[in-house]
Image 1 (cartoon, rainbow, N blue to C red):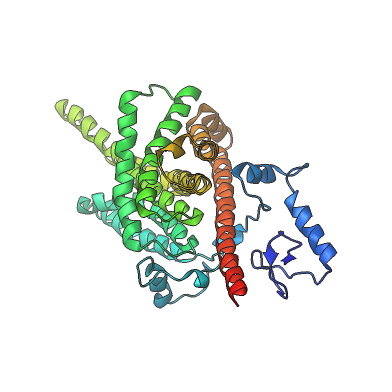
Image 2 (cartoon, rainbow, N blue to C red):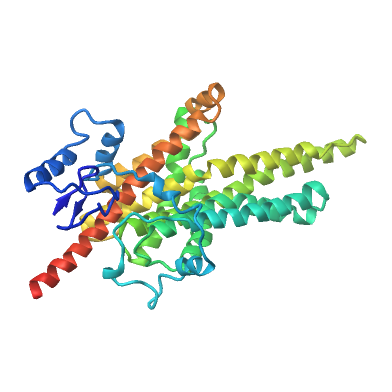
Length: 398
């Protein structure tokens, strides 16, 4: 094995470039190669950055190779319709690739950007119908498309990141719609037992805990039925449920100004007054835009972490059952989305955003995606281990 001096990834003898970060591999001796491995194995345990500490907390035994640039490196490249269709054709008995065909290298997603562009164009056309021509027949469509655009696009990114390609688009869409709505029902059921009256620090904690439990229950049920326990698949299923939760919740928030407008106009009509509807439209547009911008760092990513947490705990235990909810490994990882969700709704985030607009949200989005990238790293290491097991088995048989 040749260990990369940049990220510590193990590579086969004779390789010229690292299969993880793509950096040229040093043509050094075995002694220096061992030093590279030791250096990266101990990184984060002695004076490392907070990212190294977070990497260690998540449970990654390799260096924190965030490699975030690959999420955008292919976005501005030219791609054909056939390439897009190839991504969507996966997960069935005839389209799931064999293990030997699965890539252990970082994925280079791009289709999510085209899906987002499609939604943006559609939203703009509907917005013109409503705001320019005053045709309110397009009003429901504008709210739905505006609310679904970013959560669905982020979900497609997780589809592309799942290099196993073992989940069909039918399963993805079903999980988005049914799983997303089921998680809303589960959350409302939990809120019926405990109602949060005020978003102080304790109230924010309870909101985060209840909503993440509501999504986690549905993610667990789907993973258990699916039976495909890999970290990348866990991330995908969690992202599908979280995207559905976020999309339908955002549509509800966008509709609230309209409901308030109906009440106000009813009162105003009783006194012979007219109410300008432009303020309502501005509130709806602002709600759609704000929640769309923040969506990638909210419910989608939080639920994705819960999905990966279930898989990691299940693989350690050897079985996926309800006892995972009390497993230390699951709880350790599940605490991340709960805490981030709590901070998102807390007075602290509100205060930071008032002083430095959006700074609190940006910081929380950065943290959650660092965790997601660490988990993708762990998922790719899982692929590499499986490929090495096959190769080792073949070598023993030959």
